[in-house]
Length: 206
Image (tube, rainbow, N blue to C red):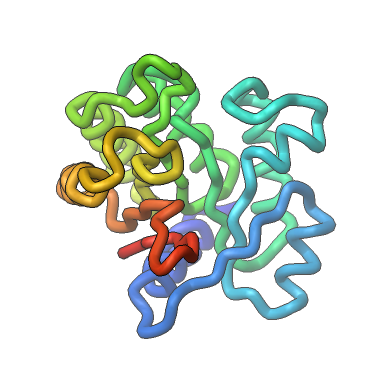
């Protein structure tokens, strides 16, 4: 994919997030599914980390090697003409340098967005420290700026999804995290698992 095409797709994805209606992103785990979604009229496609991992024989939770995950992302991104955003779980690394490497790999794969979560897979410390997650987001933003492709970063907080802390304190904790992530350079922020009137919702802003 040439750079001008990728830049155009990145701008399109950002505009879709900024539109008056919610953006519905179908999640594909292979090329066939992505092509079906594109033919059905979806203006953009997300990849599912769990779906790709399962299709290749791995459990969820960054158990699949980054290169294998992004090989499939590349196949999907090059098979469709709409923007593709990649679910990269927690970034495949604990440090900003490692997450920056993931961002470079995402761009090399032809994707123009990422979903980055703050879960750690550590039951004793389920969420990353805010300062550490902010540093990872900034590292991704720096890679995008240097590349010239305006990567759409969706930063995900897992306060509700993982039921961290006391129920009546989760909202404040989630808002604090999402505000910090947005200030760090993530134009899209989301909090999955929010329950309103006993209905589980996905709270997202861009």
